[in-house]
Length: 303
Image 1 (tube, rainbow, N blue to C red):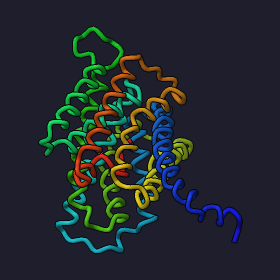
Image 2: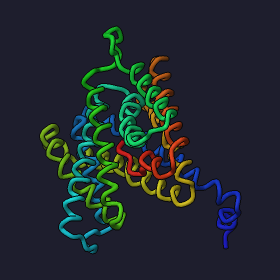
Image 3: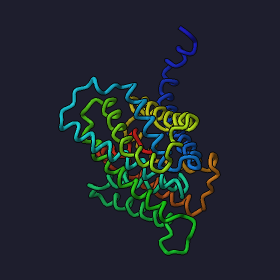
């Protein structure tokens, strides 16, 4: 047995590895999404979304081979809705990235799972988190018309992505009893059928250029396959509540990725807004029963 294997089996190293996997998954997701934005000049946001979702679907089909699983007609209908919402969520998010920074888009989009987590809440503290999240949005959006740093169309797309992410959680819950690998593969395939027509309409034959396909494959692997795999490793060993708190930091990681990869500089107010939304998300997880906190811990996040 190698010394590396022995080291990995020590209790201290074994305890740290799931958290390293969690951090690695979030960094990979944000870095992959930042890299995806560099494809916009070549194929546009809809074309980039089509490459990411379409190639991810092919990868998942090859890995999980869902045709070997038995699904009822009711199961397939639920999977079709789940996949359709997933596709619209990804398309809306990539359209938002066309005109607003990654960290801002993630912060707005994160209102979707936060809303689901707080929807049935009745405790006073939960209304504090709602108020804090609204404050964050108020700092982000030029509601008084005096701030001209964010494109309203991009913000609208991010808000639509938030709605679809909330729907993705709700409809994903309805298929959670099915085999996970096959479910994700079929869902991503339906998402691809939803998004790819928009990509072809926007990018045309450029979408099938071999060089573009290679770059799209990198995006699919780095923003889908790798973070999904790392999240699965983390979820097996990290308490769900801890996972939910950590995932709430996605907008901040996205903002840093946007800064270093894309040169997207945020204003002080925008950083404060992201901090407010992250605090609301963390607070919602920590003050909710574990079953209510689950929506914030979905490993198949859209970005």
